[in-house]
Image 1: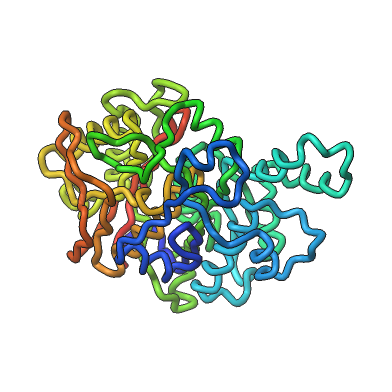
Image 2: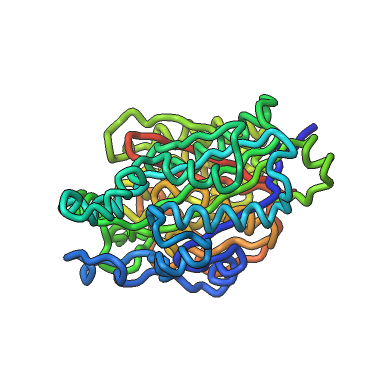
Amino acid sequence: MSKGVAITGMGIISSIGNTVEENYQSLISKTPGISRIESIDTIHKNNIKVGEVKTSNQEFIQQLGLPQSNNYSRTALLAEISVLEAVENAGIKDMNSCKTGLISATSVAGMDKTEKYYYSLFEESQNRKYITAHPAGDATTKIANRLGITDFVTTISTACSSSANAIMLGARMIKAGKLDRVIVGGADCLSKFTINGFKTLMILSEDNCRPFDADRTGLNLGEAAAFLVLESDAQVKKCNKEILGYVSGYANANDAFHQTASSENGEGATLAMTKALKIANISANEIDYINAHGTATNNNDASESKAIRRVFGDTVPDLSSTKSYTGHTLAAAAVIEAVYSILALQNATVFPNLNFKTAIPETNITPVTEVLKKDLNHVLSNSFGFGGNCSTLIFSKA
């Protein structure tokens, strides 16, 4: 019986590293990537902290060998860098050797460029090229063209659960026999629009975020991209591929409560976790580690904590939020944390929840605060988005 859908490659870029290995080393050395804003000229740059990738757009352009006349947004640059690492990691030599798809997620898309040049578009014709780079599907199209993927290409944008839903759709298509291989993931860059939007919601922290802490003060936004290569059992066997782990469970539910807030008792989160466990065909006590959504906002952490208590009762598995390293990377968050979940399985390691001091009184959940070595077979990862879009993924050891 299949353990799930095989993961054969992964790539990532975030504020704690430009490769999978760099991210892992930062995780185990407790080195966060949270800092003051450097690359965006915003009035909030000295008031808040973010998880910013320090590599410039020009450096990415040179790394990718793009002409200076390109119209890549920063989201597209981050996406392409990470997807190329994933493809190389999976050892793919011929993209058309089997039926291959691409499912990419984003929420910011190309607005970092359109917001920058919005007021000068009529005067400066050279910047009009970024208008066509604004839509959510632009980065997806650029990746598909670079890799030569034509069998199935789509984009998902469901706020902060976007890349979880990309992974889920990819796994379902492989299980249904629609694709032999699918590259899934997502990317988001920082932008004034998101900074101002979250500032308006009054949920941005002026300090390093403190997930699940009773005295948490809000989230840190971040930018990042990551992709996984998923392959069918038949394709893995045919090519004798190394398996990094499995996508064994997945579910999406809706909280149906509020446009930006989660319900008090975490209805959608509870349903998503319960359904994912059912699809993985495992019980709650078989989960060894929870990589929580853990945004460090008052609403999310209280709601998610209650949902976790509802599913796991008094025996909550080891838990942490790695957003204390990277910040909340919006549409990329779920796939960033998917890579971290797989690294946890591969290295028998639970990564710490940084900056935690005091448990939330109502739920009294204490996350792991030091690097913890232990055998891991199943990791559950939560991702919850605006509009009540709640998704849970379960990753299992190869």
